[in-house]
Length: 113
Length: 115
Image (cartoon, each protein chain N blue to C red):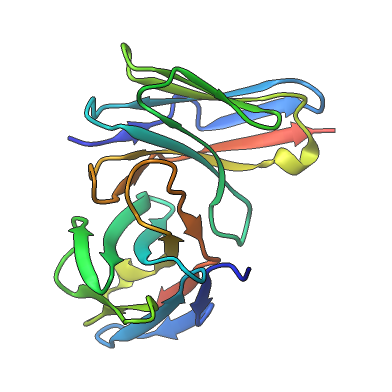
């Protein structure tokens, strides 16, 4: 069935280190992937997205890598800061032309000062 | 530009009651999606509306319904509430709700507690 899973439910890093959050997806027909950040008491906040015709996309301090061969998605955060502490979700669009996001369970990132 | 707003932010109901949640999308956005977030199941898609039409629906019972108005504002209704309906209900809007670079922006959610 359609599912998006995360390899690591929790990740703890030191301030200034780089963080890598991984995600596996099962629907090979998914063509659009998004990473969201959710802080306590708030709704998910868009971080970065990538379409299936791309392998890599960079934003400000963040990079998303997509490996369609093994159906794997990763989010890299450079120079992680305490403000990056949050739950990170990957999501894939499984609805084709009609928007339907399937989310992973989430990874809790804790940045230690 | 104002973000997605949801009302009320918190709600307490008892089993068997019904509830209506409201969502106002970002100005100009025509697609509104609803999600349920629980610790056990995570974020799960409920339904998506575009120009007052439901285009997609998740795997939820018929007790969950929604609608969208001509101004793109949306409501979702849950009838005959069960304890398991306690969750954070999130609304997200996007300009077209399709592929390309259309991004979904989430509201802060409505925390529903069913006693």
